[in-house]
Length: 311
Image (cartoon, rainbow, N blue to C red):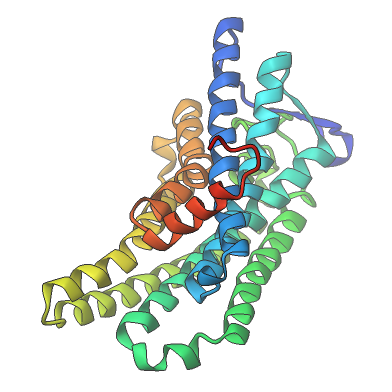
């Protein structure tokens, strides 16, 4: 029998034991990580530097990119290093720190996506009150509340997860430290205590999900009432990027945490974890910039400021 006081390190799940495939995994994750750094970094720089983008939706988009950069930087580099050096070990403190950051950043992102749904609702359903309801002070408060909700959520989960004894060894069936996988190592009576915290978190997540759904029901109802086709197209184009990001994030994360135990397996859990922790931070910048003329113009201006650009 071992408990948390006698565990000095955890062993993470390796993608493969073959040297060539480990190198392939390293190169694949390196490409994904660089793409995420580039995409989110460009959005942060463009929004910060272009005064035309100093509006509520781009302010929230900047915060979303910061959260995406943080979340992917918490999981991917360690996995890359493990593949490169052919190791699985992570220290007890390192695992706790990474779990704290992952839950904090993903929770903050979900809260921020909820706030962004409210922004789209006000912009389309109450356009005359947009300046009042979405003033700069209100936007700062909403963004701060999103970050704070993620912080309070992670304090509760981290304190409960790492205060329980571990009786099932130190092998984590995931490529990063994830709450459900860490809990599998706990004693049965301690798992029940943490289950209450998980249920509270799930209820909060469903509350945000219902708020997003209701917001979009009212948005689509208002859009369908617009008489001109051009007006409807413009309104839909304002919402589709956010709706795509929400759908990707919610579908993958809900499946990861709410799928029945009968569907759980190391390989499936690994794929699902990649889908909700690695894919969204990488594709979110692409989704938001694909059909956004203002953001494209800002990125063009940013490119023209790069020194040593060929004439």
